[in-house]
Amino acid sequence: MKRRWMIWLIMLSLVLQLAVYALLNWKADQLLNPSLHINQVYVLKTDLSQADSFMLSYNKKFLAYQTGRYLEVIDLTTNTKIFAESPEKDTAKIVGFAWLPDRNGMVYLIREQNKNAVTSLYSVDFSTGSSELNSFKPMLDRELSLAVDQVLQIEMSTYTNKLFILFKDDNQTHQLITMDIMKTLNRVNQQGEEILNIAVSNKFGSIYAESRMGMNKTIDVYQAGSKNHISVDPEDTLLGCRDDKIYVGKISGNILQEVTVYQVQPSGPAMTETVVWQGEIPYAETETKISNTNQVMIKSKGRLDVISANGKHQWLRLPDVSATESNTVIILAPTGDLYLELLPGNEKSVYYWREV
Image 1 (tube, rainbow, N blue to C red):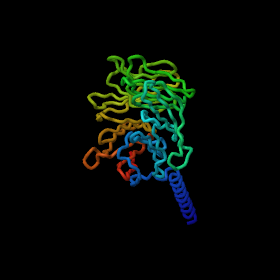
Image 2: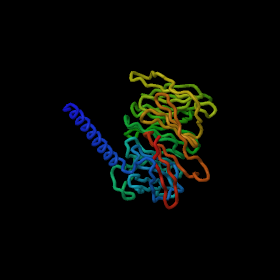
Image 3: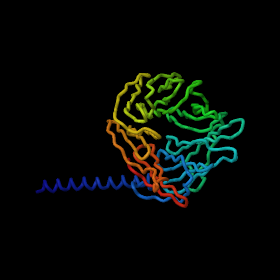
Image 4: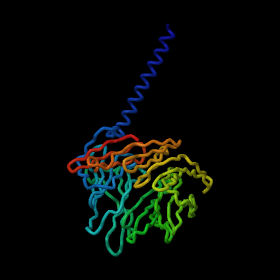
């Protein structure tokens, strides 16, 4: 009898410990993400009817977007607008922006429409400031003598503190530049080379680029001043990278048929390759991300496909363009575990956090 009581007390103690741990874990989650509850409706008293280019920060705390000549940021933990910036000159425009992997930083570029073609690079640190509008002050990092018409991608490696910017110039030619912490500027692409897509390894600081030179299309790695082929198959496309893994998809007729993972070796440029998935997924007008758990996430019209590291494939139906849902916007979180479903409006907008 005494033995049974001892076992019962031990089990009760374990249950209480687990309950306390769960409560503390829930409290910690509330402190970190006080307004992140799955499938709950949230209301923004902000006019987002004309906004576009929505982008979530890495910690899922901030939502940035462009509306007219303004770049704006909403703090989702308070559901208030905290940043609204536009060029001082009427002849200037914001040509691109991106969140940085440090979770609270952002960079954006302003182009002055004059013969000198000056583009200014600004940064904003959202870890220092209050919840009041425009308490966060942008800092001018550098003025570039570049004719930036449209920024296509901005990537950063925190390992090397290098910033990579892929853009179109006034001639609609793709240009790729890199900038280090000393603000040294280098052009990466060769004359006549069209860079289609880039991905940057945060672990190694390497840059991977899908490019076309004449009739030849390749995926290459730029590392330590050298350039080496990863793939020369014209059907291969760069899906992204995560630390020491590069993800390449084989596409035929707007159908993704295969995903291959290239594993970077610490000893040098040699790589191992593994086909992790084969099948058929529509691949047109897509947005692709590689999650923290090495999932390939492909958002296309009306669906979100997820390919796990073990090759398992699942897909979710997303709100499609229709008479009742034509303004719905789906914004993938950089971490890959959630997405934000936004219904922009005039006087107010609503959004939901959805699980992948």
